[in-house]
Length: 128
Image (tube, rainbow, N blue to C red; front, side):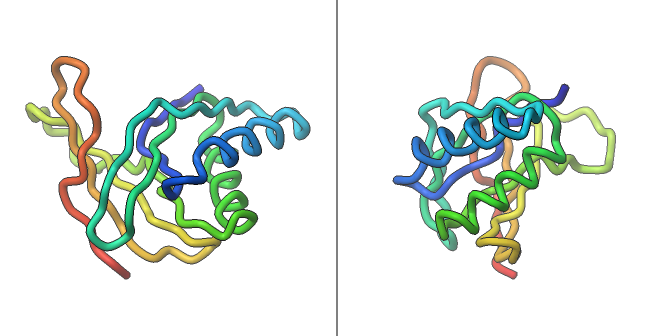
């Protein structure tokens, strides 16, 4: 099983979307459990997002976050895209797509320290 903490839900919709995600995956008997962890990321181009973590199947997570975006008509961050180069750096990186429904409206680059318990921060973002 995989997990990720670079998925986000447009601020103000976190609790209802997470409850909906968990209900949907239980009813479909899919392997996915999502929960908010009380961290908000602000972006210049896309607004504020409540970040959440999940445990389960990555394909299910991506499919369900897109469904949630359509159902609630909100923007979401679909994270978990790792850089291809395998160079050890002092900071870890993760890449994410910002979506509204099935449409990708931008990309975000996250970074966090490899040491300690630091949160993900937005390093760079771009609109499509």
